[in-house]
Image (cartoon, rainbow, N blue to C red; front, side, top):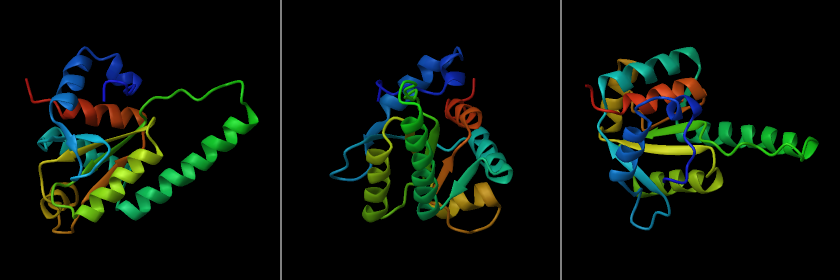
Amino acid sequence: MSTLKLPKDVVADPRHDAVVRLLEAHARPLWERGRHQVATLPMTDTLAAELRGALAAGHAYQGLELIGEKLASEQKGLDALNEKTPESPQNARVSRILFLANDGSERFYRDCDALLSRYPQRLLACRLDIPGEALGKALLGSTKMVRSVLVVDKKVGAKALLALLPPG
């Protein structure tokens, strides 16, 4: 995980090292044969507020199918840009943060692991220590099941990562 280049706003923040330590200390495979290490962290009130705001502002999406479509569409654009200007290589930096509930099925986590394989340079995932129904309540104010939220705005993603830190 230390090879990931976190968003610039996280790197510039004095809490950067604390975020890296938190992500690394709590990293485990998403499922039994998972290829990617993903931190499992508590849901904080600050993170819930950041994710609610991101969803309301259109800076985040929920639902793994929609998330996969958005990432694929963005990748097409990045690939086209790279073809037009091959002399300007893309900056390999995390720009998308995928937050996951802790009660997904093995298939769900396999699908998440596949997304991490497909977009390794720009996607970071965090499993939150909260079930999907409680995540839905925290983010939407209803009992609608929410198992995945993708933050697509770099600044909002940085704020969300910093919100993972314990208060104080």
